[in-house]
Image (cartoon, rainbow, N blue to C red):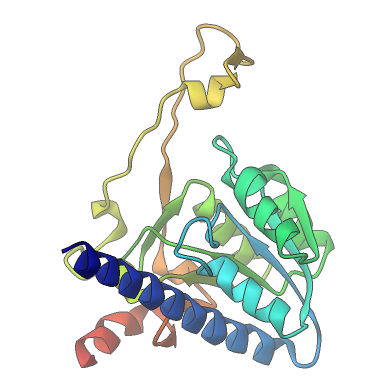
Length: 234
């Protein structure tokens, strides 16, 4: 029984890494094709790398794939307040992999797109639903709005297992609300004024029309409106 469970776990590991590498390849192909011969500058949010997956990553896997091809000029990662997954985890992975990388505050994304050439924004997704709306870490939606304003392609990177055809619209996705202390305290030390109320949703929903680059899966890169048909064909 132990050997059977161990083999099953190993297969899950291998399958996940293989899926992530395909996502990385398809995403890299799409971005580099649009860039011509230039090396690219990319922006990502939260953590979607080997610490969040089995060992390669989804959105960060695309960045990893571009770096492996020698085409990454700079990767920018947001701090991802209030839990700082970008500053703690993504930044660590970028440094560990020796990728050219820069950490920015969440509030700097619009200024970054305005003053520097950003070739694409890449994020992951906790859930993708039938109409192509996606739920991801809080702050994703505002990045999508900002990217649309600055004409920067916005990509969502996720395996097909994250696609939920049972839900029709983003408003149907339940959104977790996290403890206020994540906003008001740092390492147990209060930084916010006592008595202030807080609203701390863990995720937000990005409408399909803002996903201008496409949804990157292990099957390829698709427009949000194509997902339903593609999955039914499998």
